[in-house]
Image 1 (cartoon, rainbow, N blue to C red):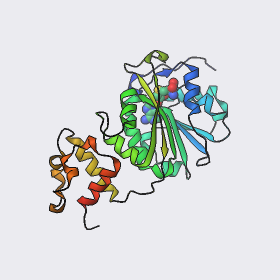
Image 2: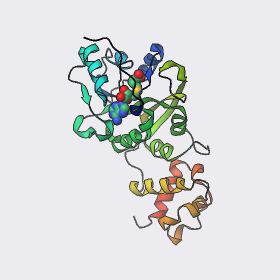
Image 3: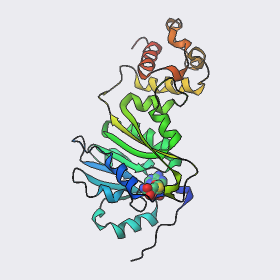
Length: 261
Ligand code: SAH
């Protein structure tokens, strides 16, 4: 059995957290309420977070890791994880097949794919009651940002439609090996009570994306490619810019876009 650490690979976004008290704090953010009995950690690496998840008896910890070297490290150092290490790419997984029940997500995410991870979370939101994660500070702030702020964007609106989001704390680059070029932020997302938005949800996504595509433009102009019906053209929401609209405003816009439904 080797004691070698995993050699950090840049293309996999590997920055290993060295500060154990921060790892413990992040793991402690999972509320462990009754909404789930399973937790999936994305990208455990050498298990710095995993070690604080495993003793928690409120849930069963599973991990998914793309890096073979990390997987063999975990197999050697965490025998109790046996059978719960998924070897693969989170972005390719069918969460409904992997877990036929609610599962919380946790991780020090690979920063290069954190937005893609969140689009998957949205897709599987019915199954994901909670997410606790560390990611690039700017992205963390953007996701947690309220309307009217320059940071507010597509992921903020889409995620805030279904999750209550809190920015927890900032983590300095110096506590990672190797240190990333950016600061990090930890956020928590808890599924709200919205089962479905009171509008066409596919259209909602289109409206949000199109609105922010030209975020400096008034929505009247930004939304032109979606051919808004005549009936809505006098609506004052169209005189605003995407970043000024709340989730409820976007729902309203979507309803106006699809009058017959
Ligand atoms: N949790 C560890 C490692 C964080 S680095 C720590 O805090 O130290 C990000 C981890 O995500 C790496 O282990 C990397 O191999 C893994 N990873 C990268 N892309 C992945 C993907 N698509 N699916 C699953 N894991 C991935």
